[in-house]
Length: 220
Ligand SMILES: C[S@@+](CC[C@H](N)C(=O)[O-])C[C@H]1O[C@@H](n2cnc3c(N)ncnc32)[C@H](O)[C@@H]1O
Image 1 (cartoon, rainbow, N blue to C red):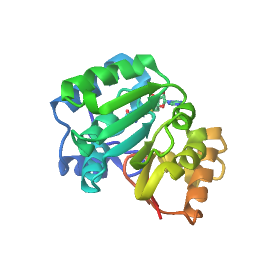
Image 2 (image 1 turned 60 degrees about the vertical axis):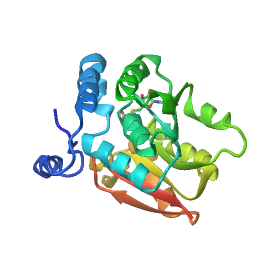
Image 3 (image 1 turned 30 degrees about the vertical axis):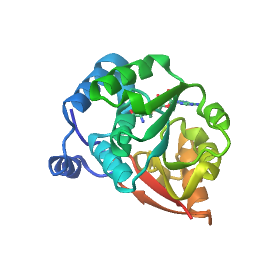
Image 4 (image 1 turned 90 degrees about the vertical axis):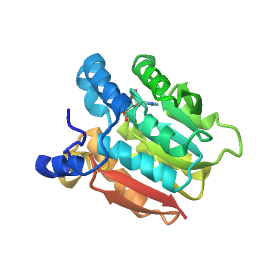
């Protein structure tokens, strides 16, 4: 099983990157296998191992304590974020699937991070709207339905402290954002999202060609 996904760079380079990055540990490998065996074709939605390592390093290096994830699936990215925020951190996870997040819960227990994760099963925009006044996040990760990315960004930005970062997955969409002939709803939404964020004076942003494209958006 590849520890890195080659959606944007070629497979040879992706393999080289994996071979020279910290590899997934036993629980992470177990979660990759469980996702493949128990979710069928949906396992492609899981982030790559290199992305998980990046998220963990990033969360810990910015000293993030309060974080939120939109789109949890079987919990690989959440596990990385939860490790990065450390035992005193809190991560709210938003998803609509009881079935997929049951796999996440099992592996968060195994990894010893379950007590720092608060999983909310509901459409993420409802979960965000129900957060108490004064909620402030240091870090967010958006990885759910692509047509709502702009709505997630708008809903989260007021809840981010100045200097906080929103990470966003799949922003290069297997390079389809480059092709004007690709007009399906997800590609159009991601293309529009990338334009919107790049032009937004409230933030600075950069797209990293890792996995399927990861955007870092920092609130100014
Ligand atoms: C790409 S997967 C997330 C992958 C995950 N970050 C990982 O590392 O494995 C997208 C997830 O978004 C969830 N989702 C889709 N629509 C949603 C919504 N409106 N609110 C919350 N979650 C949603 C899906 O159930 C799915 O689990």
